Image (cartoon, rainbow, N blue to C red):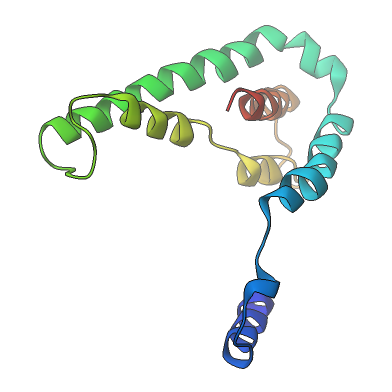
Length: 140
């Protein structure tokens, strides 16, 4: 990260036109994202995943939907109270869209810590969190 900050600072100071360094969404979606998804699917322990598909689906689908509505309507309530002024307080659609964006979290840090051999985490817990993460990304 520090190397990126240093290189970015040097590029910003030395270049007048930074359009060369712009990041295209097409590159992300068509070049960078498919190998990440492939690796997640390839490293998935299918037996553990399908043994717990009911709990994983419950966490992923129902948890995300419930969290979306709770966060969305709480934000809408805060807008109705006048605490947030830039949000439409007559229609909850903006608040629900925000709730959908915030509810679909990705537990990468949690999985990396749980996957370390020193921690000796329960494999059932790891497979539930990993499976929920995969399905949650699909739902989002």
